[in-house]
Image (cartoon, rainbow, N blue to C red; front, side):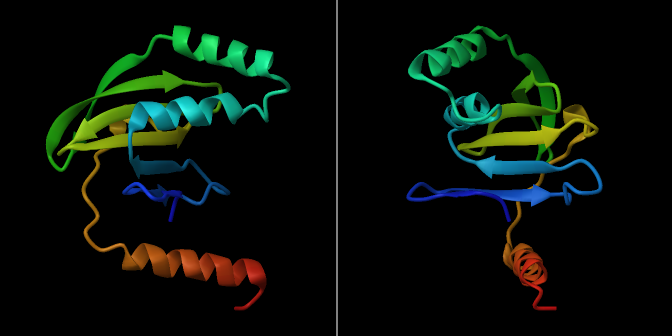
Length: 137
């Protein structure tokens, strides 16, 4: 399972382990707001208000790349921003904002997304990861 954003209806699912290969997190949310909040802190906490302002100026001046990603069988437009070790994409489908955050080695244009109707298998997997991290196996 990925991040959750209460009290909104946003939530995320992570695919891939991160230890052995590429990963992607798919989050339903307000995509541009989430990307705007995540990207300035990826290089660590801002050292000052001036540092944060500088980072935000850089981000707002960056141009995105337009790509098409199939979501539930429909081609949807996404804006993609590429970093040195990851990329971010923002789009919409069926009235929901979608934010994708992937690592290099995973091509955003090779993705095909579909709605997850039952999150219980993901919850079981997350619980197993937590038990393993605690040494409860």
